[in-house]
Image 1: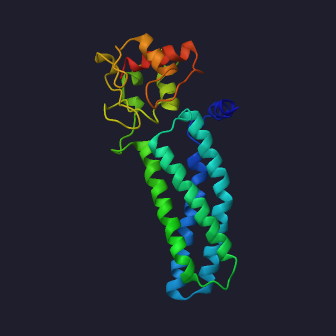
Image 2: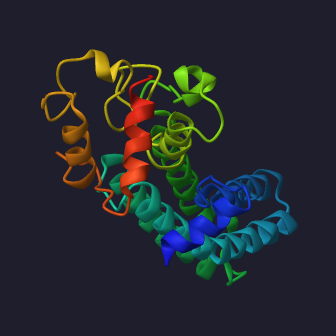
Length: 244
């Protein structure tokens, strides 16, 4: 069902995760809660306190689709793998839902002074910063590197070729964890020059087509498996990895 949903999106040209599309709204609302609350406290403006309360309610509403989208992306792009940044994000998200929910409920009582809500608002703001940090680690890695698949030999492959199909598939399913222009670790090891090495970077098995297929279906350590990939898709990935 999830695969069908993402395949439908890719059919209309949308190949990105859907979580970022939704998550910016609750994150923006939480930042607004803190800023409007701070303004209400410092400037003694009750109307700003009311705006902060409204933003906290909007944050709760949009948290629901953001969480669902995040879980779907996790299953589709990461195969449900329990990677450290994902675990941390789940913990921080749980704390944020509890904290902003408490803030919204307490904010319903206008008798509560804004200065009593500010510690809670500030805590929510810190949680948002933490979520942003670990979210960027998932996308860019610890060193802030991206995975530009077009800077490889696949850029010169004809459209529709096995190598180009592999590059497109890699960008959709693998680039979230692996770099192709570097050997540095992102989430998983960088794969630059894979076929010029003697062994695979984690399993230390010889670099052969059979061992790459084995890694995709029965991976070592935290890498998710991809049993749904067809033989043709695996062949295209291997063809592409020979060019990086």
